[in-house]
Length: 630
Ligand code: WT7
Image (tube, rainbow, N blue to C red; front, side, top):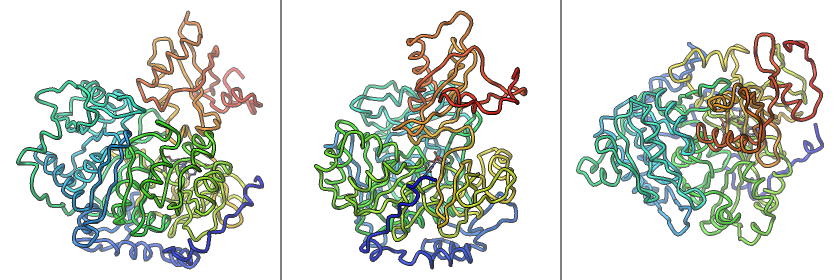
């Protein structure tokens, strides 16, 4: 352990005074003694049209069920219940465009009207309970409406980050057999238009299941509209079918709410499935406690709704809490690297939740971009996506937070749906440690054989208790669910991360132990990058690894075997980089390449990434006895 681990930031007295959870030790102990009672208490703060018979049904573990027998809908709690109180007039969403003169705001009342309109349109297109709707939208209010409209009528949304390529989109549409895609003409990316509709056109050519495409006008760019398949949203909205009240369907607590594709160890992305009942309880509770949600708060989560962070803590969590969410269409450095701080100042943001890679990016532009703004409304800061290095933590704390604001680091995953390791504001924080398991959870660090390792030793991070917002399965692939998460150590959830635990029970996450790379907080599978590369005619075989990178956390390095006669060159590297961007996503662009004669493999043909990593870092290659031709 480094000496950084000794740093402890005690929460300021005024933060503790107003915190919901003041005596966190007591809450933690009570929840530990009876997790189900703790979760039942939390769930009873929400509305259920029929109460549950059982909090947790573990009879078919690891296929856990929560709040069985209950009837509910996340929209009842995220929107409808606020309409009968003063909250109906409160801002649910403040949206600011990349062109910051474009602002749209929605009270809970008007949010409901928008959601009803979208839901009516979906119903008129024949979308029903259990149907999967693909949403390929940028950070504009319609992504809220689309997700909530699906949930309202019992359809299952599958949001695909609007930076994925046509190939990646098509694969995900096919896998989910989605009949409807909701998209926009384009999105604004640093002053330029990213052609979403065109990408959908390309994707749908290979996805025969799609019957209808709904297109939101956003950038005003010209697009090609298929007369039968494609529909402008604003035209549909004018039709009589779009008007009027649309009831929120009451569902079984275990009915699916959404699937969200994420990267795993193989090329095929995993479709993580979440349900209405448990997910609403988990996201509601964790946001409320860790970010001390108060009626006067203005909450900004910078994540895109295309990722789980956007699902849980931009869309659902804030609305479940009746809070005001802020969403910005643009990026943190455009047009200048103070755009975020300008917005924090102008809109009086109180709680600001972002990713370490963004902090490190902005840190490099210097303090002046931050300090020229009055950020005194900020009370709490948050971090997610990868470990935050102590240097970035201190800068965030000192320069952005003016030394006043606790930093709530939150460790969790697409699979977990909600925070798993974090702090509440009244807990001491240690820069670089995500904190402690959430109330009702217990974590452990295991060795290969499944024994808990001593304090300070690195091992496999597992979660011991089921939790309400846990994924229920992998969509259409229950075997892979069981095998990937529950087989290595029966009875506990395998996170795929390595970590240490310290003497105070704080957890220090180190990184992934599988073939997943976190690049700028984005999760990518080595196999996805490799299959994008081998689809290039110059490439015979490829291996991708993550190497430490100052800003991105990890950068992708690829070892590529070239086809006969092809010579390595700068142009070829650029060509390969663009090829990955086009076939997978610009976020997956490799940083560096090497072109060896062959790849190190085990006798059974598995690429030994450990050796590639050691070579790339100029380190000792270690034990080579399993290497073929060693
Ligand atoms: C992986 C999950 C759910 C949040 C967005 C990412 C890494 C996430 C932290 C953190 C250290 C973190 C882990 C995890 N990770 N948050 N606070 N500290 N590592 O979700 O894309 O499913 O990735 O992100 O490696 O397993 P995801």
